[in-house]
Length: 614
Image 1: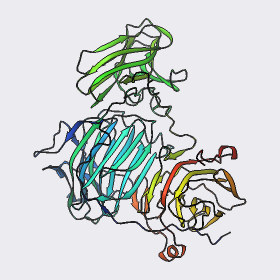
Image 2 (image 1 turned 180 degrees about the horizontal axis):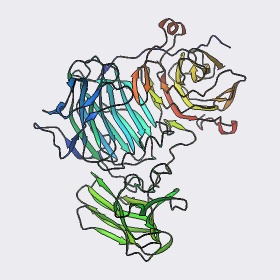
Image 3 (image 1 turned 90 degrees about the vertical axis):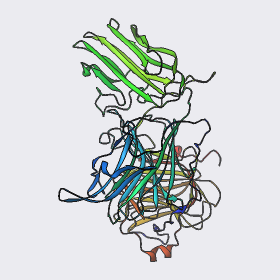
Image 4 (image 1 turned 135 degrees about the vertical axis):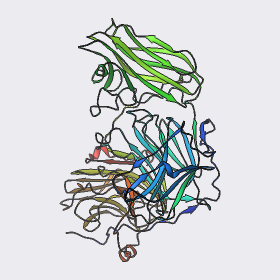
């Protein structure tokens, strides 16, 4: 087993919580935003017209006798969620609770001011968005924040939630973890901006993390919670307090507000008779069918019709808390003709229902309802068909939007690819800055695994140092990888585990303060390092591989203090001893990383190009 002096060590350092000098409410990131919903939790009772209680046992990885109770919720100048042990039917439970909005929210800026419980381990406070007030609407999850008491870290996450069992091969889009930013009174100001380009996260009014993710659109409910019984519990009774929740919206002319408009979210994994985000009604649900092939946009379309029986069915979506103003509704349609009724309609917008009948079209045609004046922040879109056996009408690319600006064209419906090539990307629009304070990003276990992988990124290090900007390496075994930078400008590609590994080193190729484009490839025993598009090192017959799927990856601070257990961030056990850490003089990465792309295959030399700025 080959070793060399450039040994890989994951350092175990993390900063303490930083204090924000003044945690006053922050303004939205753009003056184009309008406040559309606010709850300051005044009075003495929860407004159950706006919120429901989160109830019942919370099972799952890392949970220990966790139970949510309505009795733990009180209102007194804020939403108070008590956390404490409680004896119920002869069993001691770690009880907490939370509330879930009855309303659904889409693109916009979300903000809350809270005081998360920090008096001991075991309590998980969070503000997040997922699921719906209606069935079949679990599309993704945005975690504005998750804080485990006494962990000193806040998590900002974005997950795909489309039938997790069906989409288990889809990587996490983003999981950012950074030191908690609390003020002197323990308050935490958190916001996130959900836009057509992705999600941006804010702490104390400062941008802290960005997730580029245009593939999915959704209107979903908001959760304010404090779970008790997360991992080891030694917490004393206490509470998490949410002072307010606010939602702001802005206009996106030419951008569709409806999710799953091209019926791609189901793919071939979710029941084709229940289109994601659409609510089905009528006497023959089988007459609602998502079909592949021959679509007007993408690969799928919706058919209302039946080969065998008469039918009368509709699919609807209700949009809530959208900006008032003039909208248009368009759709691509085709029809067999002869139906008793076939139409697309919009209602509940503050005016009389508007609809348009669908005539016979053998080829895809666009239909349009212009000048829909929304005056109550709401609109319901309906697709309806009634006919006899053998009749049908097809819908695709259904769009509800404010018209594009003069001379502009509508933003195309993003193509939905749950798994692409590269399998995962980060920081493609703007660099991520690391300050050496312990901030890191997780990436999924299925990313950078298999017989062959490629890790490609641009680094701009503030200074030369022994540091590990990116890795996916388990503690033991013969499978995994890491990219390390050396204090003399080396680029090291390490294969194996923390305990046993082999390093492939390209000498003196990165410089402080300058962009450096690095590509590390592994293909069945052969490792290559490219720097700024030039092959700098090749090593063959490496007795390690990259097939491990037990360890999540890390970007930024590879300090091994935290681990991912399922989808829960937990303090890691074991770790690297202090003597080894001091000997290697490892430092947390300081600088920027951008254009991060990880492939589950080896790129060809023709595919590796240095950045245009080089």
